[in-house]
Length: 271
Image (cartoon, rainbow, N blue to C red):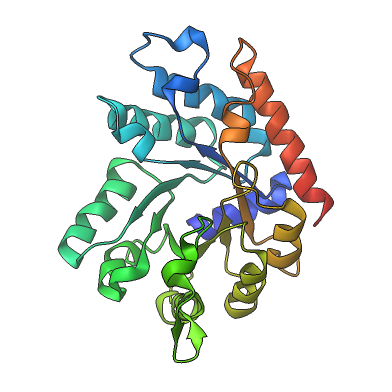
C-alpha cells in the first residue's frame, strides 16, 4: 500500500487527523535519560508507542537526530521500530530535501531505502529535476513546501509572479504537473489560515501537512475549517513540542498520550 492510500486508510480507520512530530531535544528529556547513549531512540519510541492510537502519521525531524553522534543510526532504528510496531501509521521523514538531480537521487535513497520512510518533506525551489528522483518512488509520498508556518514565509512565498503569489503557482504546479502518480502532498502552515483555504481550493483533495499548531500559535478550528476536504479529512495536523514534552516526570509517556488524545479530540470537534 502506497503512502497516500495508507494515510487515507488511517484517517478512516482511526478517525484522526493528528500527526505526531518527533523532534527530540535531550535538554528537555526526563531525568531517566541522562547519560543514556540511546536516549534519542528510547524517548521517541516511548512517545510513539504511547500516542500511536491517536496518530494518522509520525513525523521525525532529521535535524534533531543528525546533530548528535550516532543520531542518524538511532533515527534508522526508530523508523524500523515504527514500521514494525505500528505498520498502519505512515512515517514522514521531515528532511526538506531539494538539490540537483544526482544529489537528489542520493537523498531519495537515504529517505526511502536507508531510513525506510513512507514519505519525505521536500523543497521545490530548484524545480522539477530536483523532485524527479523522489517522485519516481511512486509508492512513497513527496510532501512539498508550499506556504510554511514561519514569519519569514512572506519574504518569498507571497511575491507576485504573473499576478499571483508564488505559493499559488507552487500549489498549482505540484497538484497538476508533478502529481501524475498521485503521491504528492503539500506543507501549509497553520499560522496562515486564509492562504490555507486558497490552497485547498487549488489542489482539491490532495493531502496537506499542517505545522504550526500549538507553540507557533496556529488555531485548530481555523485550520480544520479552511483546510478539510468535503469528507472531513485531507489534513495531517502536526504537533511536536506540545505532545513530546507534556511532562518531564516519570509519567512522560502517559502525559504525551493524554495530550495527543486531547488534540485529536479537539480536531475532530471541528470536522
